Image (cartoon, rainbow, N blue to C red; front, side):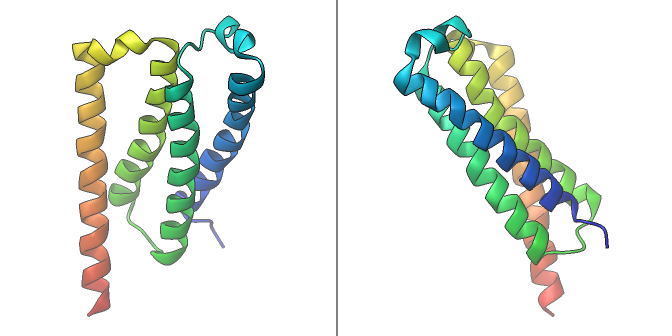
Length: 130
């Protein structure tokens, strides 16, 4: 039996989230080591860590609850669920990215696609209730 794409993505994202917990440990116990890795802002690091965990859990839950899920719905959800948390790690390394028009446009684009995926998912679920 194939594993739904959102479950696979969610488990992988949870794994990355758990691994990023080591960065959180460095942030509290060895901040100089974190800076040596090029990560300057622990707040963005924390947001990325938590977002990876939340998005992973959400994907696993939805992947189990709504199966089968068409790829045209799953892909935008996976894209947003992965890219949005990772953007916090980029901001942790370079907080000035927040001011970049290119970064803002990329973030907005991903959020629009992510939102469209969730709207399509909600529509699919409502239509399946009938």
